Image (cartoon, rainbow, N blue to C red; front, side, top):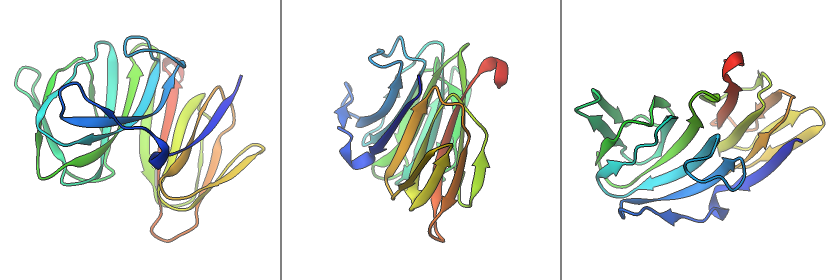
Length: 197
């Protein structure tokens, strides 16, 4: 069964982190109701307000992308990771098993996060600024960071303004996406089963 759900960032409830270092607004978690040990894929937006550890998630692959702010430095001496997440709209992929430390490079920053269960799915994350055709993917998400964008998939036709988007699960159509302004930016997440990756 196909699930297609629209969302707006402003309507998402921020949930505080246990360590007090920030908040997370969950956009989608599949299957519905799954906890952090049972999801297949999860997409969220986090605000990082203080330095501190990033939680480790065994058997999970992650992609993180800076949306707003000066960014952060993610590092782990034991895993050999040292990455400055300071360029907006540039995805950074890493293994969720690794416990990373996070240092602020300025004030608070806002990040886009995709998590997938290793061995089941792989996430493709990109940012588009021009019209294009997206190949079918069983699950995924489109978010207009700067819009509006016109989105078309089969019989589905909709327009997403800045800060709004749509996620889907179980859909076989690809999308045609077209910006309606010159400074447009659209986040595209496609979830692919490993045999199709």
